[in-house]
Length: 217
Ligand SMILES: Cc1cc2nc3c(=O)[nH]c(=O)nc-3n(C[C@H](O)[C@H](O)[C@H](O)COP(=O)(O)O)c2cc1C
Image 1 (cartoon, rainbow, N blue to C red):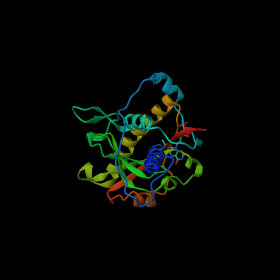
Image 2: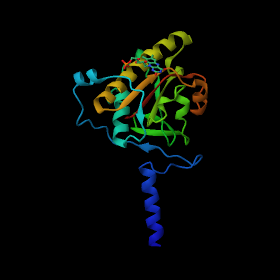
Image 3: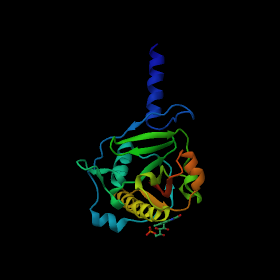
Image 4: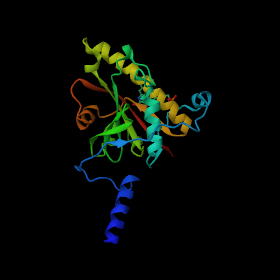
């Protein structure tokens, strides 16, 4: 009996630290992230000096704290009273959703709940790149514009606004990575249709860009 309990505890620890991954098709649960905490960040000046694109990654996961900080810096809620965010958005439509693809599966960032909502229990990171160099990045962020949140109007203007809104989020990610010594590359090159299918997007949810984040080599 004791042995069984010990084995069950060991397995759950291995799952929680990412050494074991859930079998494909197994039900995924929402992941509650820790509160974002910024103790040792560099100055903004230093982060701007260090901001750069890096295309070489060492394999390895981001800690839950780093994931929480990264997502909050990217596109978290910085004014809870109004629900406004760390990046601006045209007409405050907040149409960009941040999808997070990891070795364990794909999730959608829920900024209100500070959580990752499961989408698919499958490693789809390879679809985020037409260039192989991001394969070892811990996370590939997929920026998805929900055109349904942008009101009436043509796709053309919506596409421009969504691209601009994504750019602000991408720069937040660049600055966070610079401040924490992480590697990142913002990209247009991806397998867009296959990625949209894997993420179960509706036709009016459009992928704008992707951005890998991981440990530097
Ligand atoms: C809109 C946009 C699209 C980009 N697409 C790609 C891409 O598909 N692949 C890639 O390796 N880098 C991509 N980049 C990164 C740029 O190549 C990179 O920012 C540029 O070389 C300048 O380097 P720096 O970011 O270190 O200043 C993209 C950057 C932007 C802003």
